[in-house]
Length: 350
Ligand SMILES: [Zn+2]
Image 1 (cartoon, rainbow, N blue to C red):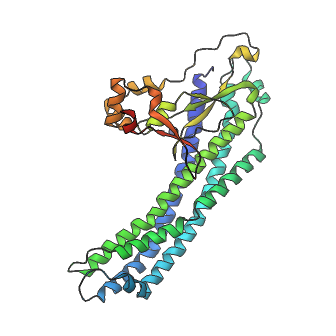
Image 2 (cartoon, protein in one colour):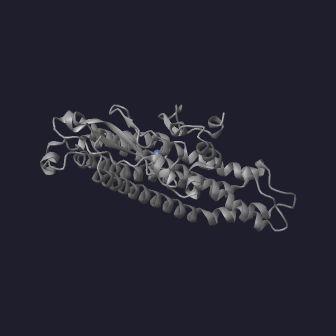
Image 3 (cartoon, rainbow, N blue to C red):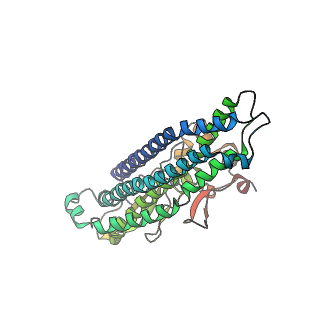
């Protein structure tokens, strides 16, 4: 596993390239939601004012009263149409983003593999021998991702609309000034409308990242003869979850998909070149430079350690009651792939 400093730099560069794609998609979707809401807010507010103006005291209108408020129902239908359009936008933007993420994942592999070969070898010659990615691999992964996103986003608009309607029925306190109540309700409706955005962003980011990792896998499969497996590579930052910290540096078989992290997990799949002697090169491997997760964690400030682990988990770890690997557990998910998630503190301190 002759991972070199070049390897780490290339893995970091690929991670940064994918982050840029994810952030651009997130910004575009957020902007689309803000614009759509701006187009709806005034009509909704006027409809709410109208509804509340007809009240002769006595609290929030009944469900039946809301259902009969024609102007409000029209505004809600406009919101439902806007959510449908936004869902279509999520699908197209995520497909574009996935294409970029797949391209990055495929094109990075030969360089990362070559960076683990002896320095004396002619890198350019070596790169030319490694199998490059094909347009067909790319198209296949993008197509699968697009299909998944289409199915995952299917309930999105109806659910956000239903959440808005639930807020309306639940109501807000109506005080002396009904205009204040209308504004308070508008804020609730905005929250429900933006729930669709939160969900869309999670789906988009998770699926683009998975597409990127599938591409890395395809790029590694194409050069399987020189690889012994892949290494789970976490960013090891303050925002990296305990499970990904624990999984960092673990080596997996090439056939195994992954890294199968939690939703939006940004961990990378780093190819591990076979020991040089197995490749017929009469040299010892240099020591691997993959940073050790525990040592990296212990070198962070106490504040950062707490931010990662939380107090209970960190105390258990400090006492030596658990092993580093106990921090992650594999979970099977009914509607999704399996994922490695942080072991609940309750199970650690058992
Ligand atoms: Zn992760």
